[in-house]
Length: 331
Image (cartoon, rainbow, N blue to C red; front, side, top):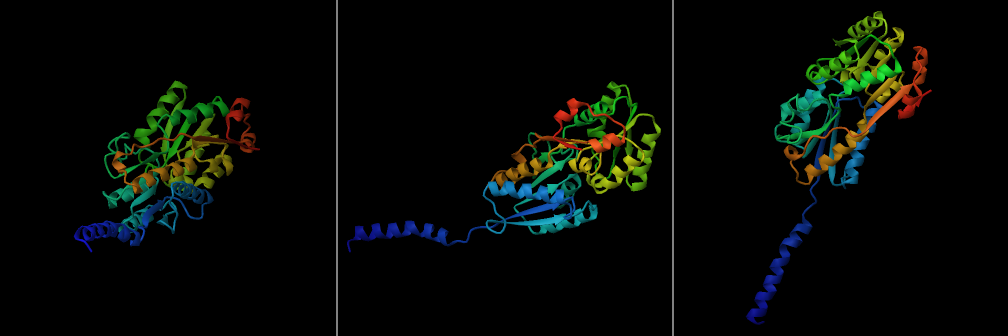
């Protein structure tokens, strides 16, 4: 064999070696951690996780094929959130989905390097998760659950469905929703002032305090209630609804299930859409984007559910214009 032919043959073979080596390498399986603030027994919570999985599938990620998903459910238990946050970080996933403010806080305490995508966080800036909404700047980004102005929307809807009230009570748990005083209450108080009504914020941490707050709202003629959504309130959803029925207090909620379970009206962001969009951020991070460079997104879809049975029990007549704009009416 001539020397030139030998060198050409050797060069061709060498060029093919990396390709063959890559072909023989096993495909890397990516790992995604999921920490849910809700209970696994909650059908609505499972539906949210399904939306996240569906969004991943649309981007080409399938559990058990090219990625593995480690899911932990906490049922609103803050101690479990901290325990499972530590456990998931130990697994060293490529990205973690964090559901709620306390869950994101628990994960933030455990890692400053693993990318975290939060879903359904009230005030990511005020909670210290990001440096700014446009430029998070750290290992955390995601999707907020509402804008501060939603408090005025809740009051506006109550004024339409239960006109003539003179006081509005804003009920929340400061332990599971610590951002309320600085993020939502200014909007609530400003709106109450413009409506010339008394606006009262009442912190609650137990069922006895919930009943006391609702009973107090009932003692004031034409009193109404705003139930701030968080893990605590959702956990006690049915109790809250039973007490508003007992004391005949018109109340507005964030979660659709509250109206479906007997609450008067719910208005809030579409959680399923938020989880579906969170999957797109997880996909971008898995493909190389940095969480620090992905801006925090706000809700784009809202849902309003009206329960006519409850309205009738409270002696309220729902305006036709409000019924037309509702996404669901329970008769």
